[in-house]
Image 1 (cartoon, rainbow over the protein chains, first blue to last red):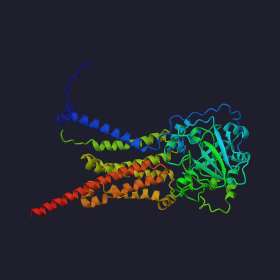
Image 2 (image 1 turned 90 degrees about the vertical axis):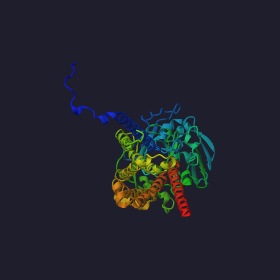
Image 3 (image 1 turned 120 degrees about the horizontal axis):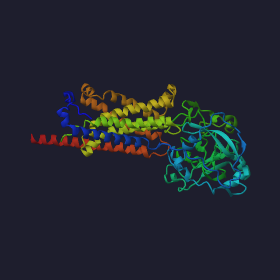
Image 4 (image 1 turned 30 degrees about the vertical axis):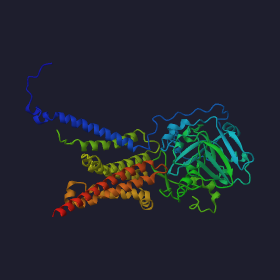
Length: 332
Length: 210
């Protein structure tokens, strides 16, 4: 390399006042970078509290449980929803399951905590015989069928989910309800080891839901054990849950351990927590708003435009008769 | 060197305030906002607006409590950040969530306390943002300008109520923000009580000396 003989031009010479202030300049620069980085990351973490990001990789499809001989779909496709199905990833990463966390994404991260086998369901109350049933016995009795149902959350979003399970009516008939069985009460597992959210007291645990007996006997009411052809992941209510497609999603109790038939209307978790906002019936109804937001429309997960919400979530033809003569604004 | 110029402070606050927006934009582009990206963006931008608002309301209490002089220097910047973020929050609600359905948005605003309270906070922020310049202080006179900008206290309360009403069951976060706000108000009250007591004392001593 040859040294340049040319002397530096006067314009290239650092001004003496800048030369003198170079330390200050470097210091200010460092303070600027440090402060903006600290403030920026602080703001990002504060503002995403409670709505944390979904896990980077969607959880793997769970394996069918061992010993579940009948884990095949026996009858397919009754009551299909003629709409595109929501992706497996969205169904399994956007969940309301407060026992596994209050945000939408936490349940997917903690769903593995639920041990789906061995699992039994206690049958109690107004039945021919109170007993404890093993989940695989239930699968053996009824087999599994696929039902593609719309799911409308009370928070005004919805999905289309291919469930796998059996009609609740099949189970109830087998249990031989007595004449005093007017209501069915569904209880979720209480075990803070598997459901760590039960350490927090945001709701009264265990979660309890209920149906009137004629609602429960309606062919649409369903016990789901799987979705997309595989066993339910924990966050979706493993190993078995209630699905009542004409009602808001919170009616579908998850991870059920007890089904009790009884004469009186059960006190249900959300209507106990906020009786003015969540009723016992909770039928999807665009004409009856939630006190804090409209129920007239909904966002279908995966779509940008809003959809109009349909009475009884579009299942009116099959269920509206159950409520003949009832004031649905009063019994919301 | 003894007297710090802090000329890096406001640019640093502005830059740092843009980071969460960049983060949301990046996550939106990479499908990292979850199954309901509009709701996630709406909630995070809304919470961000509340954070800016409370941060701007904490500047004076910090000065009172710790004697720091730098927080008041970023107060206007934080207040303007709160306004633009709140505007962004409303725009996401109006454009992306409600698809510009003016009628249904207006019905929401007048019918639902939760939305009415948030909307009121946004509307009240407008005059504060418009009069945020030094020239406005001169034009209005300091006393009137200060009286107008006390609206910020009411806006802070409205914003916390809006957040509280939005939450379904777990009220921990809105209550924490409410506590921060209340703590700031308490410090201001103590300081102003002390100031008026000192003034009275001074007046009394002057009267006694006469």
